[in-house]
Length: 223
Image (cartoon, rainbow, N blue to C red; front, side):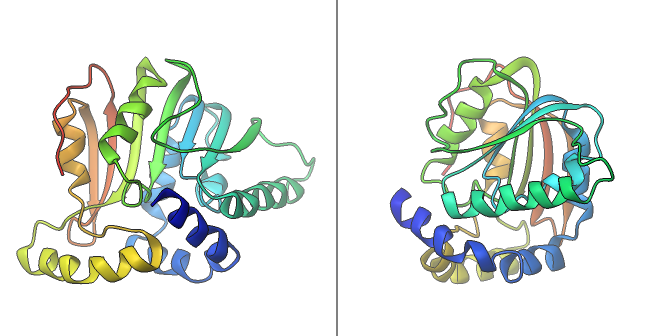
C-alpha cells in the first residue's frame, strides 16, 4: 500500500496545487491552515508536507525556529522545495526567517530520536497512512513532553447523511489518491490519550483543526 500511495503522489505532484489543492481550499478555506501555522512553536516537524501548502503561512510566524518538512513522495517534496525557493526569492533580502529541510520518510517509522521537536504537525495526510494510530504514536514520540501536536484533518461527518455519502465515495477516493474519506481521526486522537487544548471545525464539522498535548499517550485505538 505504501508503494502504491507513493507512486500516486509522485505522478500527480506537478498538478496537485491546481487540482486537489484547489478543492481543499474551496471546501476548507485558507484560514484553518493559517491558524495551524500560527500554532507552531520552536523546532517544527511537518508530516506529509506535500507541495508545501503550510510554508507561506509558517514564514509569518516568528515563534518558529526551524522547519523539517517530510513526505512519503519525493515528487511532492520537489514541489515543496521549489515553493520554499520561490518564497525566498520573493523576499527583499532573500533571507528566510528560519532554516528548512525536506526529507522523504515513512510516517509510521520516523527516523528521529525521542523528543526531537517542539511542534509536530500534519495536514490532510492521516487519511492516507496505513496505520493512523501508529503514525500518531510516532508523532508523540518525537515531540517534546511539553510540546504540541497540531493536526488539520478531514474526518467522518457527525451528520448521518453526510457520513453515508463519505462511505459511498471513499472507495473511489482510495483508488485515486489512497485517501480514506471517513476515518474518525478526531476520535482516534482522544482514544490515544492526547489532551485537546483547542479544536476548530469547518464544513459541517468535516474538517478539524486540533491542537493537543501528546503525552502520555494511551494504548487504545479506533478503526
